[in-house]
Length: 209
Image 1 (cartoon, rainbow, N blue to C red):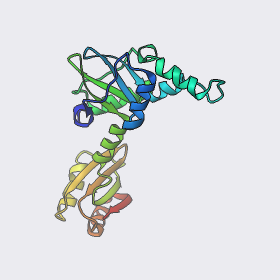
Image 2 (image 1 turned 180 degrees about the horizontal axis):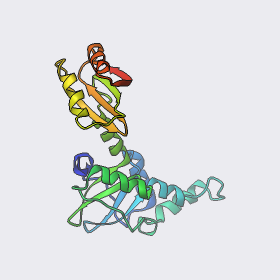
Image 3 (image 1 turned 90 degrees about the vertical axis):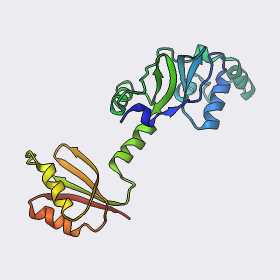
Image 4 (image 1 turned 180 degrees about the vertical axis):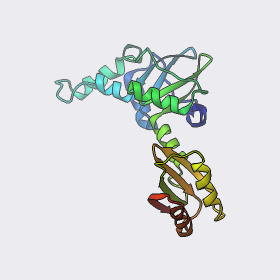
């Protein structure tokens, strides 16, 4: 899966001349936590909710609410934005984008193609993709097997057993010695018994109606 499959295309943006107050209101009204800063069609920075909190006066400040609002309405984004923005392209693999976010401790990446901002990918998009890939919300059953032996052909053998009951595998993942299979039925008793007879240890079974 690529970034283009999960990104938000044509994201909200602000200009460097936008004020901190205006950017904060945009984030609040649109329920977003980061906004790319664009000038003449080119990405020049990014402003985040975290950054706005960092530059906002402390609750212990002696300034009045009117003075605070005045300062925020006069401060330009250009003076507080992050300029060295880490970006990805729309053809970047989703897992690669996830690694970049994790390594740099950031929650989102502007997506730039040929110098033009085309979207933004966030940690929420990554989480949603993971849930979709694992089929956690889909109707059916999730069966986790211990495949400690890790013999060649194990996956094909397990799939053959399940196919014998006219059941489809809708999602599949392998994590170390655990094989996680989601099938499109909640009637799994016969499938489970057949797997056990072949020597597979069932770690867990979850059903979604």
